[in-house]
Image (cartoon, rainbow, N blue to C red):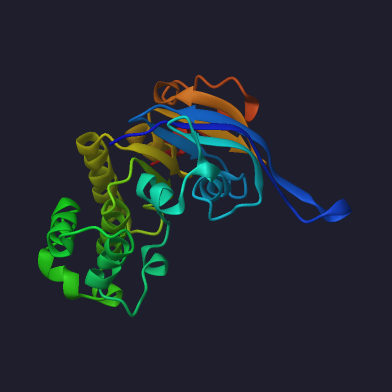
Length: 253
């Protein structure tokens, strides 16, 4: 199952009157079915805010967001949750510390009235590379990488078409980051998933994304293919500076 995403003139303002702050002046981009699209830029550039708008965790935005040509706001809640899921940056913070993995995975199945809970949970665990026996563990009994695998399993158990990834590896040890990225790449290929991935790391973009947008102060400065990174083919000054700094860092590493 896969889906397209179209965003037009997405804008959000916090506050009113002279104290109002426009966080996203007007963001527009589209993601093809099965594509991995990256959002990069410095902290505070609005990357995660875009994901919060698409997931409707933030609702006070204006503009247009369409999934497979259907208006996001007009989709019934359960249908929207079946289409779109999100994986957050901190796997420990996104999992309830007093709920076992079994409870965490069973909850969305119960809410959506799906059958064969045990079979679905076991398949989800195997799919993300965790032993089925971990269903009865709690988050504190898991490593950071294992917790993030549980978070991915929870996101995938409803079989969504679009996955929103908010820096899914930045809170993990370097040795584990590649494992999670390879897992996400495999799942995307096997399921035909569409990804929108927020990251600070252009090496992650180069590994995962087909195209990416460079954001600055809530605006998209440029949208580039992954192939533009090695030779720094960006034209906007900020995008060139960002890619150049990443290439210089990699060269010194």
